[in-house]
Length: 235
Image 1 (cartoon, rainbow, N blue to C red):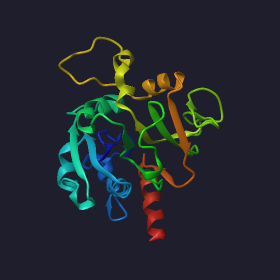
Image 2 (cartoon, rainbow, N blue to C red):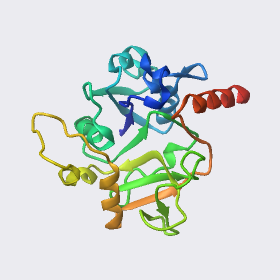
Image 3 (cartoon, one colour):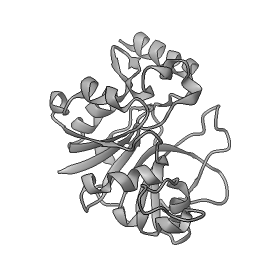
Image 4 (cartoon, one colour):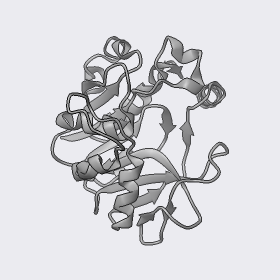
């Protein structure tokens, strides 16, 4: 059974005041929470187990989404406590619920029409990333996609990471090396995933693909309203 992780722990500072009372992934879009669109796509792609990492207003997620049975999924919640652990720390914290095989991870604040079933169940290296054309708010892009499907951190032209990727748990093996200062064994580590991805790219262990369809990063109230308007016109 395929496993997926949805990043839903962030505070959503740029979305305030909307996120003062509602977590960004639970904001309504087209008559349902934004995260519900992702859950529907995961179910359609054959995923069965979904882990949602939470922190900000974490108590709102179980009443809103339940155990996932309405989508034919089994949802597990990985509460990170009052301070979110960033993408790397959140992924490491969720690993016990994700099993020992590869898993898909997706940001909880995006809307994308990509076919998640087209992503590899097992990446050739340690990660496989879905990239998109650079949006207006991020014109510099993130990574380079070569003709052979490998992804690297240097060069041009650059594409933007969509927030959708397939990962092997082994990608996180070197997490201690990306934390500055002492590590408190009593506290979950807090760190970003990008430094580990860049290190894997230097080893030739990251592949990718380009998505030419619709992708929206819901990072501001204006982008949220634009998505709502777009879905309303399409319905």
